[in-house]
Structures are given as C-alpha cells and as structure tokens.
Length: 79
Image (tube, rainbow, N blue to C red):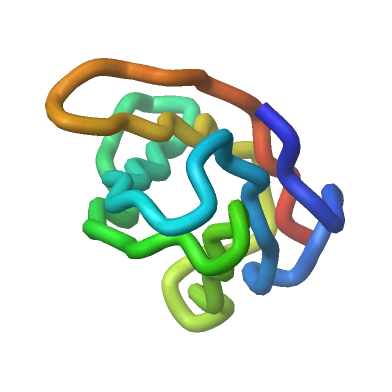
C-alpha cells in the first residue's frame, strides 16, 4: 500500500489502482479500534485524506477495500 507522505500529521494520500473507482478506507489503531471508516472516490488514482483532528500521534493500520474485498493493508505513522 503506497501511503504518502509517511510519516505525516494526519493529512496523507493513498495510491490506488483504478483512477476513479469508489473505495472504503479503514484506519485502526494498534488495539484494533476503528478510528476512521469512510467511503471515498479516487481522483486520478489517489485517495486524499485529511483527518488531522481524528488521528493523534501513533502507528495505525490502513486497509483499503473495494466492493467488500480487501485490496491492501499498510502501516501509517502520524507524528
């Protein structure tokens, strides 16, 4: 999963394979609690996320799903 910049301050982008498809992005903390779960439309193969208010400094797991299937999972570091 290509998350950039990483580390970041809660504002980041995720590269996805289809330029204009709908995706679900789920961000969980290390305890497995869901912090963010949202449906997003890719713009030019990129999901742009601005969740600085919801994400405190720490390490998170990011899962990208499409039509109920997990496409990829990666790690996010927020400073």
